[in-house]
Amino acid sequence: MGRFVDLTLNGFTYGVIYAAVALGLVLIWRATRIVNFAQGALATLTTYIAVSLLDRSVNYWLAFAGALFAGLVIGALTERVFIRPLYGKPDLNPIVVSIGLLILVESIAGAIWGSGDRGFEPAFSQIGISVGKTHLEFSHFDVFVLASVLVLMVGILVLFRWTNLGLRMRASAFAPEVARLLGVRVGRILTTGWALATFAGALAGLLVAPKVLLSPNMMDPILVYGFAAAVLGGLDSPLGALVGGIVTGLGISYVGGYMGSSMETVGAAVLLIVVLSIRPEGIFSRPSARRV
Amino acid sequence: MTATTADGLPAAPAADTAPAAPATAAGLVVENVTVSFGGLSVLDNVSLTSSTGEIVGVIGPNGAGKTTLFNVICGFVRPQEGRVVWRGKQLRHHHPYDLASLGIERTLQGVGLFQGLDALDNVLVGAAPVARSGLFSALFGLWPSSREERRLRDQAMEALDRMGVAEYAARMPSTLPYPVQKRIALARALVSQPALVMMDEPASGLSASDISELAELLGALRSEMGVLIVEHNMDLVMATCDRIVVLDFGKVIATGVPDEIRADPVVTTAYLGEAVESEPADARD
Image (cartoon, rainbow over all chains, first blue to last red):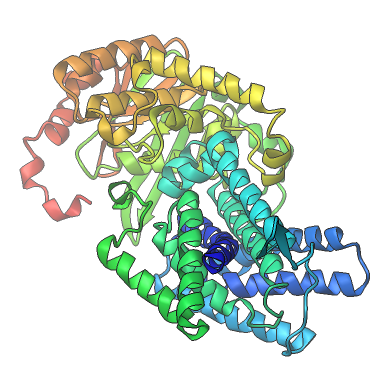
């Protein structure tokens, strides 16, 4: 029983990290119909930025905020420099470019910070909490992970639901030409979407780095699980990304815990295949609204 | 904002505002606009004006260049020659997203509603053409702007109400009948109280009774804004328009009040069909 509780809590913690990655994929997919394979690499880059700041003995939270801010800027720049020239081009082009970016960014990170593993200090203790006599593997840092992704998700939902910017983002996703005629500067909206997506990725990087070791390809497996989470959620819905992330996290945690960690990747793949064969449009997508 | 001439040199300030007197009288002046796509002339030396207080109809057979003319005004298509003047200022290098803040709204053929947004949200997108749209102002201005959001929301509800579709505010467009969707699209175009509204085939797909209500609405709009419509429905055009411009093969072949147009033999020949069969069909767009 204790093991089950630990695996469940572990699944939730990793799940929300996958959800943050998935959220980034969803934001970009909604805005530009592109699967951003560089999502993870960009998150690694922002995590290295945090490390560099910490190495210069910048305050921890300042470094944390700096990495998140770098995510916004890097996301916006990526859209303007690499992605904007690709609109209206064949679908394959952005795929090739984003995979190219993945390789490029990881190589640059390796060149600057070295390809070896290094630790990343957690914001809070990673020692498990004791509840009464039961000792859990769930730590204060894990609480922080859950809380910060929750704040991110609520923030994004509020942005989409209740702000003018969010309304414009949704309108641009559905019919960019019409939105333009109504005065929406769709180009800026797309840049904003990429900025927010990379911000979400940056958070995921900062949260996962203390749990795994920081290296240029730290985010590669996380991106795969994040992608599974996004597809489970329908690629279109931020809420779907959250649920997809948690389902993926729990699934991987149970598979890893009960069947051995070598089965984790297989578990994610099986989950993806099962969901795609039962409900190819994902759990949360409205199929009819999108077939235009 | 830096105005430049076609050859990239800074324009003299006066160049943007000439010709002063006629241009301010008419809100929109299209002057000698010529557009060709790959050698095929789509618009040939087309001129028209539109101002508050009148409804101008643009008619002509399919492929006559009506939609291209709208696209030139909107900035989707750049003319090779000629110019578009709005309120005394030449629109050059303007983008479609500039229109709303200039006070020009356009409705599209069909409906063009955002399918994933409910009716009220659809109208809200049109409600704030110049509202701040930056990320940081939205994030940091979230709470202070809630009053502004409420004001926009009220405006949007009013616009829906005026079109008689307020009861559908929370519905998704795909669940509503076509005429209701068209009214929502109109509400979206009118909510920002534009000075000019351009309608691309507002009557298409509507029943006779819907069309007569549309005619009434257009009449009511006349005093508030300029209305420019492209329309095939002759009953609507003849009943509502103050002036009609007839296009054929990209050329203006007639301009006048409805009675003049009805009596014009050139129009009858070109538009109402006698000679149409003898024209090479493939030349028409």
